[in-house]
Image (cartoon, rainbow, N blue to C red; front, side, top):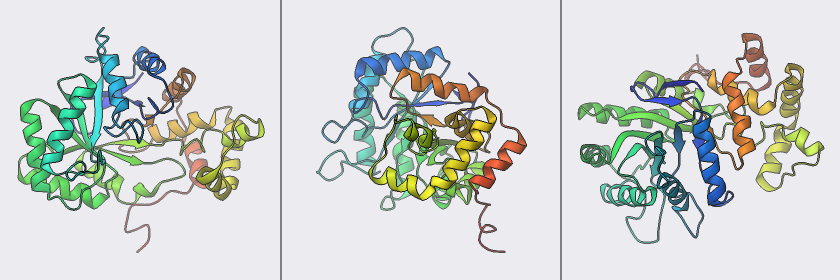
Length: 323
């Protein structure tokens, strides 16, 4: 496994981040423990979760599964850079969601209990809260850092100008501010190249892409469909129908290269500026082992150019849409 710094920090994380959203709803606890042990065995030290992951009836279940794994000892917690999130609505009562200082305080205490740990390494805002001033948010985060309950702060699903707002407010307080941004980014969805990536690079944030295979569409979906291994329905079927021609070109190109489509999609992300670690969310051990292959795959410039032809990207704004 390769390692890199998380943005401008001195924190070393693996080039793949283990996503845990499937733990609970789709992957039983015992299997989730096996996947986390295997991730450590592959050198993955960066795990991502959220306080709302689990199910509508049992929000927080995923954190509980990770907590029970930590409780088994053997250095599991010490070897893990643990990232979780705050923002999502956890109940129907006021102040059970978003980023008020009150909710941040309550949410971090609840996450620590579920995770069975005394600190969170990377505490991420799951979404921007337009109704809470940055002075309030940063004061709450500063208190948590001072108490030793969190170490770094990150964002998720922020626009470029939200990152700028956050960082300038933090700078005025002599606070480190954001160290990472977690965004939707893959060959099919490249909108963040307009402004989010330039902002992340300017402020020294590590980029943590989620949905690197775009819900499986970049993982050889057409081949699996032809083999009867996978069927798509609903939103996924509509997305597949809209992008079928591109995806066919992509899978044909992967076959020419003798590589798995999913490996190419992950390797492409690993080649992108500012990207620290794509989040891979395996449901099974086989899916985890498949994802690790991409770290050793280097794409040459000719291959990168062909991928840009199939999936055109975005230039930095405003040049992308104005002179």
